[in-house]
Length: 226
Image 1: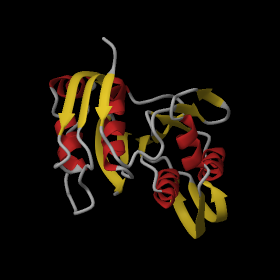
Image 2: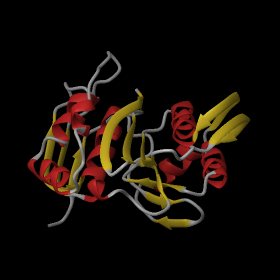
Image 3: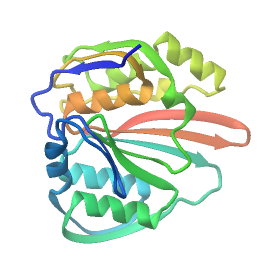
């Protein structure tokens, strides 16, 4: 079944594209808009002790670009910390600098959203496909994500992967958390659906964290930028 996702957003700044960092690219109709977003000049001054995920989300927030982060965290493993003192650099260069300092991660643009993900690949849960996903513009990103992980396909995969209670941690809300447009998708992955939520919001950055420790595996989904 062909993937179909319709997001009627008036604030789509970077459109649909799939431009992978370090020179790998896929032409799309909106490539010019996306390239413009990545060339925005941003300032990140005297920011110390940021993890890779935090540095990535701060960068996207400074550029008002929707994004998503996937990370796998092993217990006892220390995360790379970044000290940023960058003035008037394009978003693209900052993202390249972040993954250069932490080669366990890569970044790419997928469906108009900038994603950070492990170099080893996306966690299995995010690759699970769902037949259909629909949310109205009147809901918050938290409600939308909660609905996504309550879909039968998602719940079945969570059980099969022996993941613990992650979807119960999607909560919260604020006046800036609401979608600006509805999302109507068919035959897509959970990753693509999360990206659709971020794009419908306009500048949201979601974070999927999978914690693996002492034989236990748990995931959480949160929004770092709204």
